[in-house]
Length: 381
Ligand SMILES: *Cc1c(COP(=O)(O)O)cnc(C)c1O
Image (tube, rainbow, N blue to C red):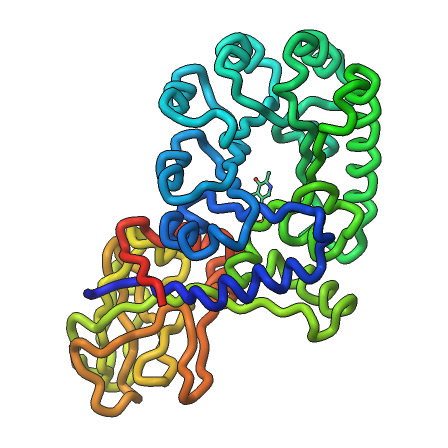
């Protein structure tokens, strides 16, 4: 195998255990496995954790098919959908699937949704301006009116925070929680008899770690299930609260093998656009990953990898399916040698983390791992 991703199942279980320590026993733990489990492999991840979590959360209805036969847990579909997507539900047990009603355009297909006897949360826009009904909007009240005869299909309300990860003070999140309370009150006024059945949720990884009040009935843990911090401010804030007692272990390693080695004289140009010039005689290893595989082109001349426990620089531009690495300083380097793209060497502690790649590519770790091409095998360890 030339390129593969290794999934550390014990790290996944470790991260879940840590979260369970900081949430109430009554709060359900939902694993967010959208986007191929943030690049970790939705089937592999779901199989490892199915007995440890209360449910799974995905983005699109079509993702149900990936895990429906693997897990018995409920599946929450958080993203948008259109009428034709509902066909995906036809042969499914509706009671295991939870949709979200999040915009008034869906009212046109509400009849089809209601007919199917599928249950749903109503999403409230408390300040993100993405999906959801604003609690003070006409549309929200209109929706509740339309649902009068289908109260038992309403599971409750959900919302999503927009500014927990990027700050160390959480006043905006608390404002969002206030808006959520408003929506809750309105729901209770409309359907007082269903009060004790309604469930509420709002927290993703960062909010779960930092805002206990946000936990409510269910938390939706994505990035940190995979052992990654939502952001540096979040990591520092969590450290302030828990010291070392809350830890995360990265789940994923990304590896490849050298497919070719060149030795070139001083003043050779490397790669498209001749963006790198060698100053000395240079040994160049070619690796079979490029931006198609998810190794971002902005990493050109910026990132490093680990070869034989030593750090080696990516030189020249990232190509579609290949990169070049300076391995001049690495003794005995050979075609076929294993190379770490994300992960560390146990021997020298040399490490390239998803956070490092994110910094170099001027993005976030979420994007780095999610972009690893789905066709690359995920090997569970
Ligand atoms: C993706 C997502 C999550 C998970 O967020 P993390 O920061 O990865 O934990 C939770 N809720 C919603 C609505 C999402 O879209």
